[in-house]
Length: 326
Image (cartoon, rainbow, N blue to C red; front, side, top):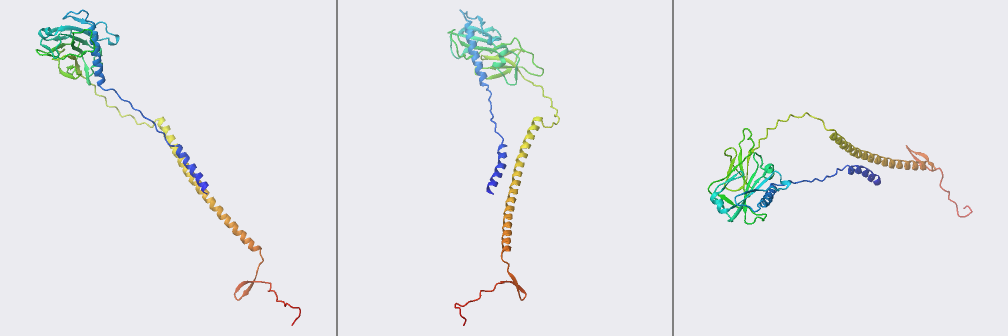
């Protein structure tokens, strides 16, 4: 009985274990922050400083030298260098320097005898190195950075902090895109730390600042309102989802069928064992009754109103121990 029960339990549990679902691993991934863009811009400044200094071959003070041997990966960018004496720049200023007008009274926080003003025009690469969230560039980013001009073969120089004391540095952009209808153009100045500062545009193309850095004209991006999506028609489950559901239902029915079938088989086996036990007991009783019927029958005698078995053979007659009669 116990062996049959164990077999039934095994038959019921095996399909259940086979239907357990698996577990899938998930991965995730991360995106770079804005600090990487600032690092790229600083690396570009250092690289353009080297190319600007290479253009200063036997330079003359107050003469603009354009860098003409930029690599192909910097195509579209313009670089120039201007070497000046600090005292002359403070007394006279310098203008025009391409799009920049440098007023007199320019004072450096670190004193150097000679300085080099490096001009940058990032062209179509402006948005890559100086992106602004929710803003669009209407003009290329122009840069004006000051470096120590005592050693023209130096590289990786730090920018000099200079301030315009008598008047602002003017930036007159030559190519400015049309301002979208209803929008307002703004000047943006990126200081040496990478922070952006906004101000009003004057004359349609002019920005001003009291410190060097990078400059551009931008406008807020206006995305058209998205149309209201129409409610999609109700669809039935996709064929793949329907097929998957049918497979799951099939597994459930297999499990249910296995459990019910096992229970039915267990009940049937229990009933079979009970019937065999009763059959053996009945068979034994019949054999005992048959054996009793085959023995010597006793005669029945009436004693009053009651019948009782009586022996037909009398008791053994007594005999004398001697041959003679008394």
